Length: 213
Image 1 (cartoon, rainbow, N blue to C red):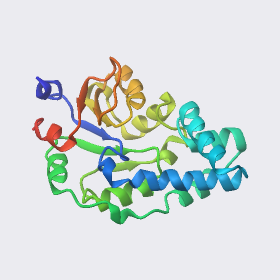
Image 2 (cartoon, one colour):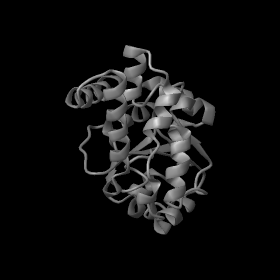
Image 3 (cartoon, rainbow, N blue to C red):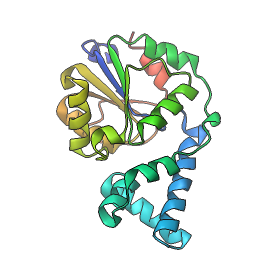
Image 4 (cartoon, rainbow, N blue to C red):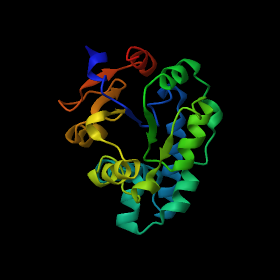
């Protein structure tokens, strides 16, 4: 039954962080620490207040960057370079996931709230560098982050994506609400709970994709 729900899909959209690589790698934790450093330094806040503010901006604006841009006029490019200056060697090639993605029919893309270069480096470290037709970063959405509708509208328009023939894979349930409303098949990757807008759930992306082909 799951396979039949994807029989019409020819456009596959993947989030990056904690979706295409395992949470246990703690790669995103490196980014969080860098973001905390940035907020602490630039806003001259005690560490605990910087962490709390970063979390508040993530909840209310979609990303820390969006909050910093709107509330403090922070320029995005230097911030993105700094917080993604991380060690990608914690990621390892995943040939099974590579094969599962390669076997999907149609076009495959990454859409991340990080910069495009982060998507390129992380996917390459996972051995997935040749799996995707295109990688879209936050700059491609004019620095508007998921889960906000304009982010999806911008990237999907550039990509020429037809929602009813597409599927999206995400680790954050809130980022699947707009795709669901647009008509995509929505797949939550990970242990989080979601609402009725989550059509499919899996703890194992490779296993899930393997069942589809």
